[in-house]
Length: 258
Image (cartoon, rainbow, N blue to C red; front, side, top):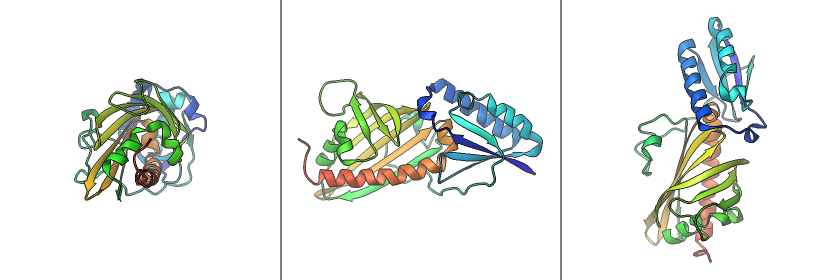
């Protein structure tokens, strides 16, 4: 027999400061606990939550151990025994044969474990120069991509992203602190973001396709919240990134930004 424990992202989670050190400590201790107690984690594809299945004999110790994890202790994640059922999982996974990204070594899905990954692509009649031009003009994203807000460039002069640019913005209602790590106009751009203790790399690859272009975007996320809400984040990323590509292509088909 086993007990089911729900792990849910708190409504106030975005307002609680979390450091990478706290997140890494939580992930390490959580994974050690899973192994020691022979527990299984199931993610919910419809909500930012998960269910932990713990053998009865280890349940008491598991609950005590969970309460001491930094992100649970701080109230970022709510731990509550008595979940009613195990959720179903999504089938979206990283495909090493499909990826087009030059991944940073510490974030390469071929080398390290990343709980969340999303891949999207789209063909467009717009030339790659226009596609790249509109993505570079980050402060204007909210004009055409509804899942972005409050985009502010924090370093360097000008209107556009460039290598090393530090910018902040909001997506999925969460504040993200972001730095551009790859910048190869008009073909590649990638940035690393930090949110609620988790780390994200979002990369874009644009290829010429006759007079038009092929747009590819891939994202990986890692952190305790990403582990718990894996299926929710994967589905959300996949849906919203496809919208982002569609809106970017439509904007680029109008020509270069002013």
